[in-house]
Image 1 (cartoon, rainbow, N blue to C red):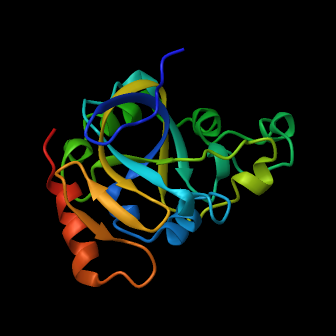
Image 2: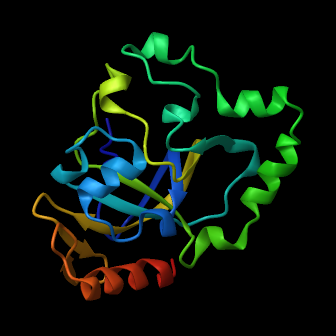
Length: 199
């Protein structure tokens, strides 16, 4: 089986949950756990920040509201995957409430912010993915930043790798700390790098 682990400075194809960079920024790992809805300590073991590198295909977008809707579903996450999938889907509910979902999908896919700038689409990929056997424990409700689900692989670029010491290595070859106590200047440098990176 081919290794599909994201490698710094390389292209990588994957679907799944995405958000906007401005919602996560150059936050320290513990803060990212809370924002995104990961079990505490998940991202402290290391993660990759990958940026979208191709236009989104509208027919592969699922609306998932905000990260307090764990898994893109309303209500508290359940203790088993089977129970968890019985929670109401945000996307399905939008259709039932007569939202023009195809138009909203097209609008999102065509948003010029998706590929560059502070609000570009990104994905945070843990080095050690939670097992997911207990969604209530592994994926608690986040603090409510926007999220979407890409239902088919899209091309991303692995822009930053953060290790367990809180050091962020960039594909450009330099590093800055982003763990607790990192300076505003270091975080700002990393933020500007990711926001302005052209791929």
